Image (cartoon, rainbow, N blue to C red):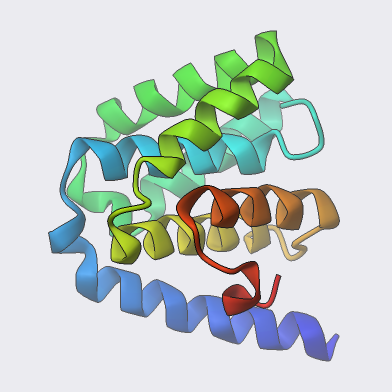
Length: 151
């Protein structure tokens, strides 16, 4: 339980930090990478149920950092990545990781996307091994050590 409390506290701090910096993240690459990350978290166990997709979409629309983007654009991007992961998980994962990897030269934005993945992954009260692995893969894609996020 102490580990979960620590993660929850860190997630709240991360969310506050991201909200403060959100104005500098207003670009298409950040929006696409964020939605790719959200879709990866939703599909972390290899499939996306309708309820999981709906819950993640609700979390996206309520996220303060992502409020700088049009909800319709975010939903469209999220659905696109979910559809890719649904139709062929391995290919969809490659596509999503490649999109996240485009932020490698923008470390602040890359860290923000990783943070969004952790926030979305832990929103249901658990941050399971599959979700942690998805975030770790994203860390490698942007050249950030997963240990920076205790992964």
